[in-house]
Length: 383
Image (tube, rainbow, N blue to C red; front, top):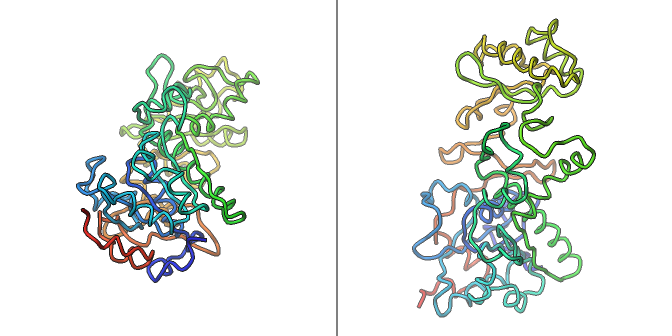
């Protein structure tokens, strides 16, 4: 395979993907995040950045989606830009790109160009709409992609506009993670057969796939096609969030009977709480639960429910989360170069993953990549 004999820099990596070479053509959002995940798992990820940068206005020093990678500068619009990228693709196991359909082909680095040099290459394509369909060549962002799949319409209270879940649901859950799953499956096939292929990861496809259980519940009559009236969308009074006396919030997920019993007992409403399945009294139950939570602070309620099976937890901010006792004990967050950030996930017993370096600064690794990947032309100045 192309990924064997990666040189000292790559050989020093651990993780289950040690020895796998990934070429990332710089983009924004889900593509870089997918490549970061591959780097977290031990792959030698080389990012091809464009001179002058581009994308979102994030200081490269703090762009955590580029952690653990190496970077080279190539102007794909220069006379020899595509040749430089193809030299790298010839030595890679995986390529990740997030251009609009047809752009990579116009630049001379599309799947056909790359497979002519490296038939075993897994060519991962990350887009919002996919490589075909009426909207394939139009612009879009996470919010539009999740809107048309029905996922956005599920989130929020009844009679209110849908709530925006940052860009986590579309870009990263429906996009990056599905791209990584596809890449790993295609890589397994390539190693068994010597034949690469194109992985078309579209955010609309992945996000729609995430709603599989809900579609099943709807078909069975257990889910209404409207917001805030169902078991898992905040419509249920024992699966939702409540404000505390200090303006904080507690999250409740006491779905099963035994957890519900513990919840109402510790909340102090066991004598007045209706049966869990008495939907006609859900409004009454919600008012009782809300009133009780409003009587004490978030810290006080956290102490009440801590370590119990009531399935209740405090709603923490991003800055508060790393200090949560459970997350701290597991090392869910880590500090790299003074920046607190999520640690690699998931975890492996035999080949543990790790963050090997901070964000790759554009063009900082030209010499090491040229040596490790045996591409001397990278050292030459662009025309």
